[in-house]
Image 1 (cartoon, rainbow, N blue to C red):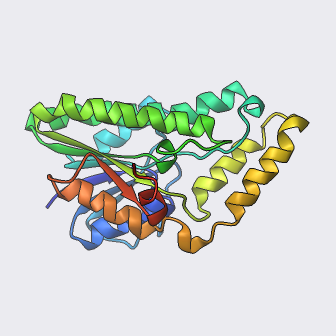
Image 2 (image 1 turned 180 degrees about the vertical axis):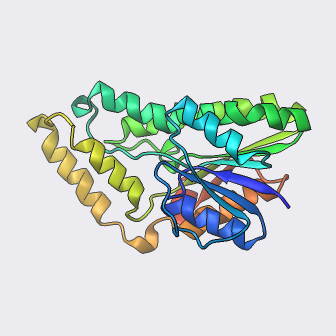
Length: 249
């Protein structure tokens, strides 16, 4: 029986992915910053562990407690939408620490065991915003673009060791804690200069016109992650959701 470790399982894509792998008979290590008992039905094949991916000690503890795993899904992340000029440096660093460096450190922590057994799968959940430049998303997009480039290089580096690396690119998701985390960050945002406000209102109006039917559903991401983990012949890049698929070149 195979074991998967998934980050960011308190809600959204991570939670649904954990449900799916459990239903398919896998052992699941579901991690989240603040474990919530009962968020996933009790199973002898489930472990819920605390994990702060911005803290190396927390990463080391979680990986050691999890024990041997066969696959890692780096799903934890934080959203952000604002004019760059109004984004404080500490916010930028926090976004990169979570979305980019947190992913890097999780992989660094599991590579020794994957390398020793000559097998393992790493799936990094990025974003389709990296496929099409959009305003007000410069910092978030940059943090995810770093993950894309890193994954592409790592796939070449690890393939000779028997380790598969894949990238899942979801489209825009309905409101989740991912969006809530972004709003928490925005509470400390600098005042946006008036010169930006007409353009921001125009852009936000466009975002609001999207209907949920056009957005990426959790099951779209689950399907892509499942394929990335279980299908050795799948491509390096997997889009998830009709809106993401529409952005493919």
